[in-house]
Length: 225
Image (cartoon, rainbow, N blue to C red):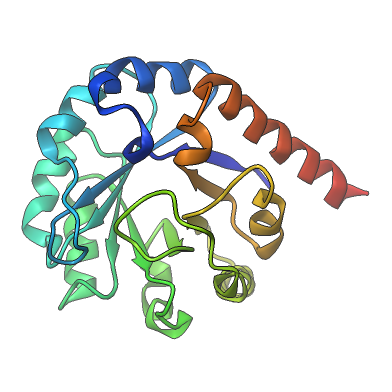
């Protein structure tokens, strides 16, 4: 299985977002995770369309845009124009999930569904054939630097099993509290896309990106034995 790192810009130095995103891109990060918070669905507010549009000019990487937004449907065209390659919306935040996912696809962007740690897997199962990815929050959404909630791992494993049983081409992304020390547990549970913020941007971001990909390679070798 191919494993991908999606560094979260939420943990980057806000005074140097352009240089920071170039640094992780040059180091080999294939995705960039962009958290949009509205102050309603989650208590904090982050950045929006202008920042993402500006960052799009800095790097040619896959923009993994995570909308932690209540009823995000009306915002989707703007984020698509800003340069999103994939947009995740929360199953808990959409009155009509199918219409919201269809609106993402209509804009030519890959749709994804996100779920909070307390949300049962069954809530996203009706939409698996409509999405490219399921994002499993492994911390309470809304701020970085939290400790991973290991009780979410069985949900990741169950999703991986169901995706495999159905023969679907659906990625499973884990987001929150992931470090070089616990990333093998996350991959072992069934995630193939890893979001890491603090663990990438604390210290030398370029070296940290390379270290994550080294751990991905080590995990592959271990599972092949």
